[in-house]
Length: 238
View 1 (cartoon, helix red, strand yellow):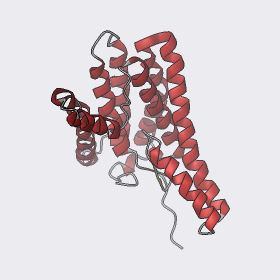
View 2 (cartoon, rainbow, N blue to C red; view 1 turned 90 degrees about the vertical axis):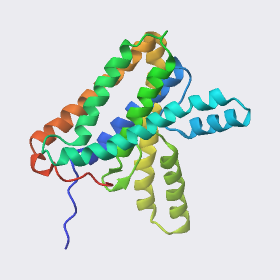
View 3 (tube, rainbow, N blue to C red; view 1 turned 135 degrees about the vertical axis):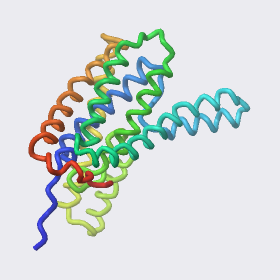
View 4 (tube, rainbow, N blue to C red; view 1 turned 180 degrees about the vertical axis):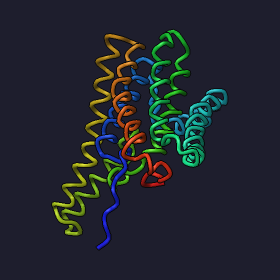
């Protein structure tokens, strides 16, 4: 009987849940103190660009090319760098990305609230794109760590599978728990950011340093010890 693939540390479900809390915090932070924009994904920006075009607001439409380009650049970088890093047997890209997020979160806290909101919006666009493109599958289940749309869809599909008999309710329940817990983690992150922003304003983003530091320490430890010989192995979904 074929043995089940052992999950890498960066594929563990708890890692994805903590990343979802971080992403929720990004979303709430950008919405509350950085211009009222949702920066975790780009559908809204594309729609706003199209509306601006439809209203003849060419300058307004051109602006949305900035966050859209930042998101595309994040995907490009996160697709290109991992292959190069694997050949160097240094650290996993997943680990370095977490460190990069730590640094960028620290920098964002120093950007005053009076600065153009677009600066932080673009930073969040860039890092969310890399996070979304890097962390793709947790313990055999494809997932997103920066927004909820597909998780909500998967909950509906799991319910449909249970009601139609295509899946046992045990299987459906497991999937509902996986995707439902991710939505809940996002909600926790957004709610936490709302409270933090109320008291700390632009500095609130530093609260994301704690979960990111926990993730970085765990992934770094795995790279240097139990997974030292697996640095060339890509994480699931790649």
